[in-house]
Image 1 (cartoon, rainbow over the protein chains, first blue to last red):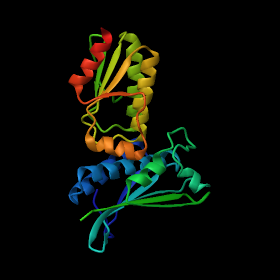
Image 2: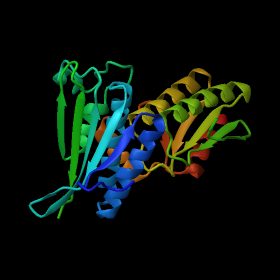
Image 3: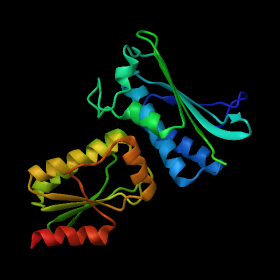
Image 4: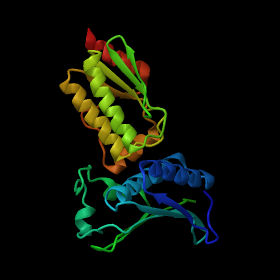
Length: 138
Length: 118
């Protein structure tokens, strides 16, 4: 999968296999930018959690991957976008151990801890977009 | 259907996960292992994850549940070969794999299970 003219790589998140493919896509990008193995592992794990959320709770959607530059620092940024039911209580959804779907309730909160930046945009009936970024340390 | 092979070694079951598992595959492995414990009268299960470069909450939960089910069926589970980066990430994710015995590699895991048998 190659990046489009806008520098964004689009990946579908509709099946279980799509989650595996996205993990590989994020891993390859982290390797290409020479992130350490630990940073790679954290970002791929966070991406896996969020991709699963898109699939299970958002009814499927897509991911967008980009490599932004800020103040001379490269990063890897992944957005998870669905048009699902949205999240009514974001604070509750971000609480460790809270789950609405029989999981462990670590997906959102865990991904937030594993990424450098975490942004959640959601409202009931409006779908959910979660964006995580990892910046390459000097 | 795609499956992870389970090897029988005396009264032990050995699983080496060598592919990046999607969720259905992980659930199939959990079901297969539980079935095989009873069918093969196994007393121990060794799960080698040295080839896995991530363990997320779903796979972590599958491992915890498998160990809990095995325990009820009178078999002990030992998880071996976790990569350091995976261990660091798991703890930060908030997963402690409580109730799952671990060993550094297959050799030590087998020693742990054999000691139980005696």
